[in-house]
Image (cartoon, rainbow, N blue to C red; front, top):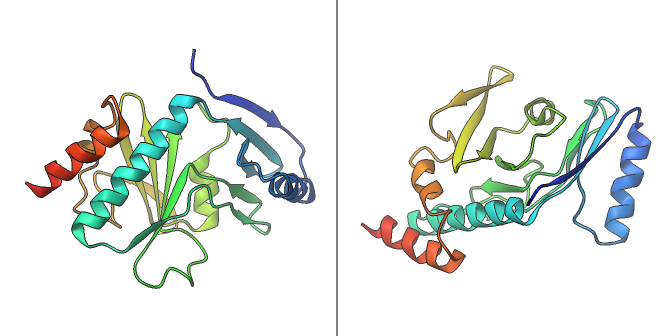
Length: 192
């Protein structure tokens, strides 16, 4: 079975968390991905299917932005962390919108693929980090959107950052046999 591999460590200090991140960087490793909340560190090595969904969703979102003239940049698993808030995470993908992307200290949108159940609350982590919007892809090809309102996340029907984006439509292309086929078909659908 194509499952993510998860490990949870308790009683991890912030210094140990930072040391783990530094060792990953030194070894130029993108996995395992990390999530940290109040001394609990979760390590997740994504499965092949997990990675596929994240890459395809990111690619289709980039096509949408290009076709609609929206300035958008993908930043992959850009590590987000805040020692004072005792929270950190590496998303599956994240995006910054607009022209002034160099000054961004946080992404506007974070995407998390929920191929397997996380042990830590990603919404709590991203709330503490001040992320504006979080998307969760879940089986069978459904994306739930959570936007920050009055200091907490609220589940909504549409993205606040990309209100004209039809996420159900994007999800309908994720099951195609190839990514290039999904890209061609999605581009054609957007041209209609």
